[in-house]
Length: 232
Image (cartoon, rainbow, N blue to C red; front, side, top):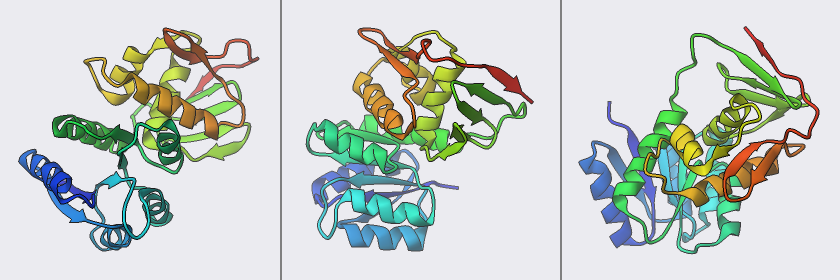
């Protein structure tokens, strides 16, 4: 069964370029040109993934993302015309799984689409386990995370990012390692993607347990008292 991608883009040239590339990769594609149409098509067609421009007529991509996620969790790749960290963090904060800054390569967009879909559809492992560390309780089979008893609302990407850092214990993971482990990017491109997702993840944590090792990457903050356990 073909995956249905909804492309929300008010520039016809960009929308056609994305659609053509997606169709050539075997995806089914529908296009919306404004915010209200995007929300309506999401409700009627239930797409598998949303490629969502930030700046849209009617209302913007952030509002589209909010409205769509009221009904169901939908993977979203957000497009922005400005290399603005604030826009990226807002998008990631309200549920986008990834973002790309225009201009971008349609080939890279397809690669990221496939990676996001893989993460969203990752089956629960047979060896269900719960990791506990630094007040975090991470259930890999249900993909639920609690911090000091409060459930966190994480995107699939944020869950995988946090899980990778917790699983590494106190070891520092480079941006390249995180890109390969979480995103499946093997060429090392997209270091800023890691940084933006870490910032978005930190904004959802009640206490920040992630430390930055400048020039290297990220790891758990070993200065915070913790207990580690693996449960069946």
